[in-house]
Length: 485
Image (tube, rainbow, N blue to C red):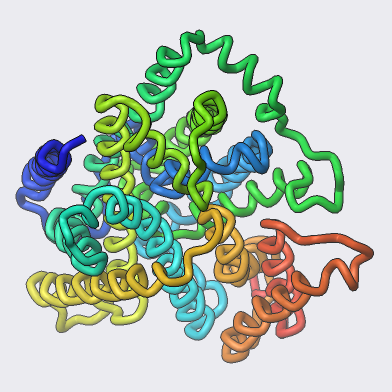
């Protein structure tokens, strides 16, 4: 593709995003920004959440994993579905009953001020790191394959995307994002489907033939039965379940979309629909990965240094212009979806949980809006600097990195909510922050020494469960008495 075609495609997509933003942000107020006036159609939220859940990590990393890990990722996805049942039947009823804007307000009501701030702080840290990783992956590819040819520095590329995301989320917030997510989901899924058919046509093979070839190469193997393996299927399943509980159910970004639904029943329908749809969607991404590896082997193509670069390398350098254009639209969608909802969620948590804007009687609608604008801009700048800094240390498949870090940053949240929901004990609230610092440290030490201490056992993503368990045990140790009923 020529640079002019790429630039024109980028402008067309951005124009679509801003058209949606202009339409949805009309007469938007602070309630529109935070919760979409609780008027979002559940089926629109469910469809849009697919793209928000996939983002650039699934779009780029999952296909590349197939050569090394086959389809073992699907067991993690099956665990996701179990996690969505927990969210729909346990967490959402509680959030709606308490009429929450920020889900971390629950921690204040259950434990106290220190626990509340600790939970909100861990979300901010988790989302800043996770969003920066996701956005880095897609923007770095655009930089290598597109913007480097124009002599544009990486920092300027990241800044451009952050400014554009900032502008279309600035006014409408969650009310806008619910609808822009649908566009991003459509382009990402379309990119995968079209690429599979283009490769099948170029190889002269049917989809059935491609599946058979993938199976003969061992790509379709899902279940690893060695219990010491990082991807042992039971570890994968339960890790997927708890990853979903924390990265969706205890995550303001994802829950804010659910809380914008009209009522609890609609929010539950959204979660169930979204959860079931993710299974075939992720299987499709893995099949794409198998197809890409088959294509690369068939034509003896020199492979990229990291598996994350497999899809862009083939799409932009070896396949047709149509494939390159399809990939580019999907990648742009992934870039936007990686950060738009997060900026809104981070702004919401900081404004509600740290600044307490909704509790202060001196806060008018206009004052809240001005502060919200400033916080939104500040988080955009922070994400920009993290992405630029991360470029120097990228060295492994990003999806593994993301889930590993999530195990340490979301673990304390898992322990806090589990203890709060399933016990009636009060805790010494002032000690909770220290506990939530100690828990990830102890989990990390256990992880790096596990083979020595636990007879060869090696932790994978299930370190999240261990981290949450340590936090829950620590809360039990800090318990004082039962809550009076």
